[in-house]
Length: 327
Image 1 (tube, helix red, strand yellow):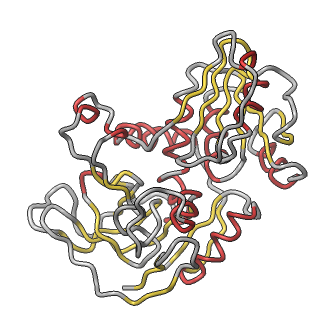
Image 2: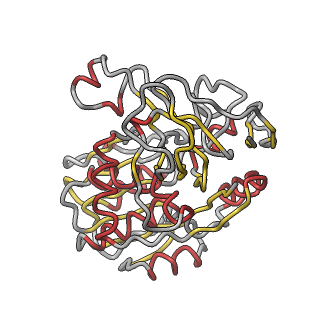
């Protein structure tokens, strides 16, 4: 098998030939058809997350087909198309798992972070944490749903009944969330880097009522804002844009430090909340409604060997929509 491997923090990924994967008891082998490129993959590559077990294969927006069954696996069949998300396994025993909050598990496994992921031709996964995808849609179109879509969905649910919704950072996740929010008849306001007219026009084409720079105030106070950009300075910026009782949802796994800000921005029962990982219930709920929404992902496809170019495009903000690797 081939894999793009992160061997050290900040080093370019290296294309490696590795022995074919063989699933152990209770696991499955998957031949990868496509893997989306997520900002978390940048954090893994750059060493910005704790305890990364280098060398590691990033990637957690995986679409592929089961090509090997480990002993005891009966829930999936050979040839079945599945999605492999960020949450690779949980302990099932800690307080959070018992309370149906497995996204906060004390001993989780994360695809492409603590276990080798999808920047490869094959991987091994736990079938209990894979999502059957059926046969509708191209692998490359479905891949961004496995994290940008899932984390976006969990973030959207955190906004409650917010009617006027701001999205800060209009990339892979926001372009999916915007479509879901419009299907739910919410009003979407898109915030981008200053001067990024391509992203602003893209947002408007997906039904956003307004698009502007992150430091701009929207034409109406927001009921809630979701921050996909990993920029801590945007937290007080978003607080200025939300109404009394509004909520700012921080959707990233990593963010730069939040600067000090005056208490008056938080006063009047405004809230700041973070989103961590996902639950299998999140995935099942989102994938169930995705066909009804008619989500169309905008993707730029790179061969697996060009993973570094895809990460560079993501880092620079050059992408419109999502990048997807194809073995």
